[in-house]
Image 1: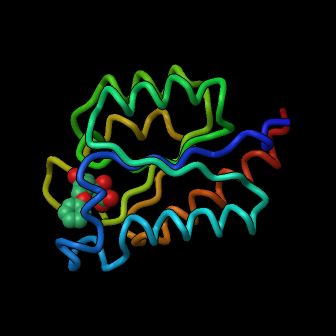
Image 2: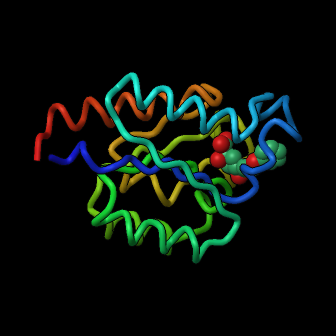
Length: 151
Ligand code: CA2
């Protein structure tokens, strides 16, 4: 059963600063609070949630490679790598997992360079601009995806 594997909630560079800087853009919720909310949401949805954050792209790529066999799906906020990393997109595509891309801010209301994502084309959906709640919506979307696509 697909759902017995955890869903990875992955956060990319600088998201360890959540709640400490730029609250007008990213809110006041810390990464620890966000991860606790994801675990609680996962429990309510019947999903096991494994939360990780890194500032190192190679570490993120290794986690995604492992996810192919060890996870049921991925909710990812790729941070700045969203707009720069073909390698990240390639790793996500190679995972062959359902992926939900999340952004806390509405990247389409911001600078032009944030308005292209290398990740979106390999995601089942994208949530942006809804604050840290977006991660919980991402988990809901994955749970619905598992229901509709039993393995
Ligand atoms: O809105 C998002 O979630 C972003 O993925 C956040 C990235 C940004 O590069 C994307 O364009 C949109 C930046 C993450 C940096 O996070 C910080 C959090 C608090 C304080 C400073 C940075």
